[in-house]
Image (cartoon, rainbow, N blue to C red; front, side, top):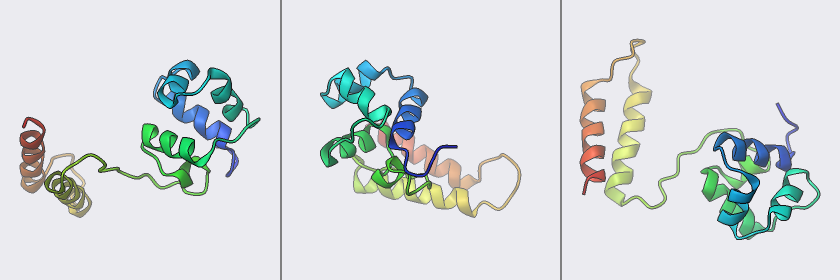
Length: 121
């Protein structure tokens, strides 16, 4: 585990978890490899716009990047209202499924079918 506010380690761990090189991340952010390297060794801190871009790339909150929040988030950015509603219902279905077996409930299967249908449009 890393220190609560060790942005550099958090960024490096996220980057490696996706299999990105520093160069690839730098290209995605429109930065130099040196800038990404400096962020990872805490020699420099990114501006807010760069933090926003990093949070979008890794689908984490800025709070998570800064080490102040450890809860996972699910971004629905880019989804239609209908798609977002389907995802929310599926999450609720999984949370409400009190059985310990690994089988999906009929409701979950129906929601997954809707997701596949939406994605194939």
